[in-house]
Length: 444
Image (cartoon, rainbow, N blue to C red; front, side, top):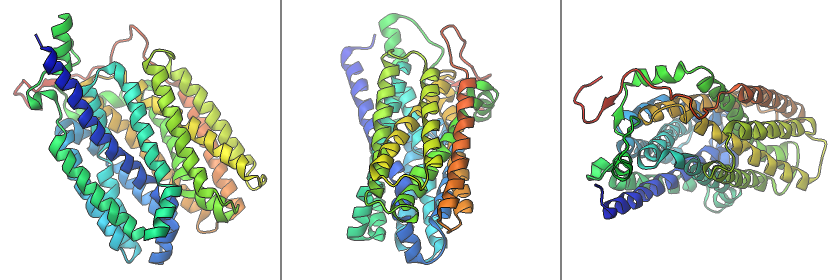
């Protein structure tokens, strides 16, 4: 029987771990969005390259790291994985700070991207192990909301900070912060309650109810088996993965790369341009917290229907951005459109919850990393397309072409959401062929 004091310790300590990783995730988003705010200054200072290509380098690296991130979370463990790769991101921030040419700048960004890529999946793994399944939608909503606070900080506040201290000192500060976070991860994160000689959540529940479960947090699955299970799940995985591939690509093109320059100097001359992007972040925070509460409290029982609504509205927002590009000069109109952009973009975060419901804890890290591969491939390809279409000719006709491509992507994404498969009561979980327990000495 697990005593009350032990349960309280487990329930409290998990918040320490969660808080450290969520704070870290703030800086994941901050780095991701920083190019939109200071990319022009960086390129002007260096004298070569373009911020669209710099952004695409970041996302290509981030995407390439997603499968390794899942493998590390499942095999090496969240504690070691985050510590090692945050140290790498620290090195990348220092390199960015001292860069004198585009090559060094690009290498620095690659190191930052590789390091920051190994945060979200370990965080999801921690949630899977230290929290009950019913808590996932709300906790994921908190994670995404905090990330979007980072995106918000990387808009107008970052532009003011860069003006005050210079973009190089910004990355010096980020290097110090990232190093501190790596130390905190090493010191406090534990992959499983067993690592501090405490019972798992399944053991706590079993002591309370007497019921056992096969979906155990200490289970292990061979990596290739986990990936095969995920990729062979058909509509369960691929509709959601491809939909978010398209949606996230459009988000990163607009919010993460082009919007400030578009509204500030290239097409419009709005004084509040940086605050438009800040409003996108604020709206995404509101929507992710809202949908997390609606789903975790059972107010909305269908994640698919909620995603369909959000994706349809997001598609309409892109239609407005495309069709009215350069035609409406009212600054507050576009401020409102950016608010709607952020709010409805947040609905696709439910895709992780919908996919995760189908898989056991033992391959949750692998399943989420597979989703993230497509997510950041979308961002990589989207920002690459932006660089090709604009090609340093930042004129209205080129932006209109780019916006048309983004709108088409949202139409396809909406169709994929409609075709997706939501887990219903009575549906069996998709199980891998082979599971290995930590208590078993067998290897792969």
